[in-house]
Amino acid sequence: MLSCSCTEYELEPGCWCWFGTDNFVKFEAKRRKRCCSCNELVNVGSDCLEFARIRCPASDIEARISGEEIPMAPLIMCDKCGEHYLNLSEIGYCLEPFRNMEHYLLEYQIMTGFSQ
Image (cartoon, rainbow, N blue to C red; front, side, top):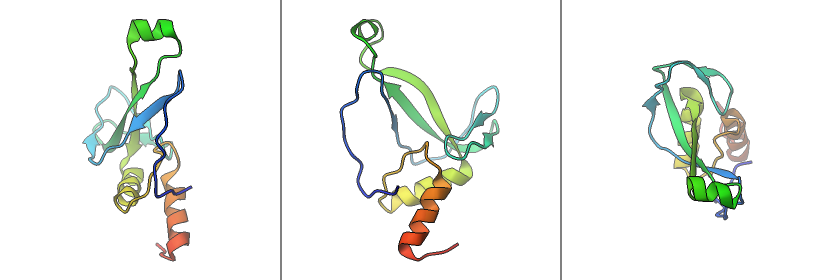
């Protein structure tokens, strides 16, 4: 569901969060990876959005070993979903990158009366 405000919250042990991005990068990896939004394969060398992720330690022991923020593999978003993400973010919507951007776009079009 589209929202005009992002909720700030404290992460629970073991929960993860992501950091938004506003620039496309070339996908650099050894093999293709699925888009976090539409699940299509993103080819190596293609333009994509990359969302950094961290998670909180699940226990005190893990916190002592790894620290308070544990890095995770980034989320990768294809260029098509990335365009929708950037455009909707630019006009003030708070989006979760792992949700389907086509659904967000359709919801926006219904709310505003704009069509494709």
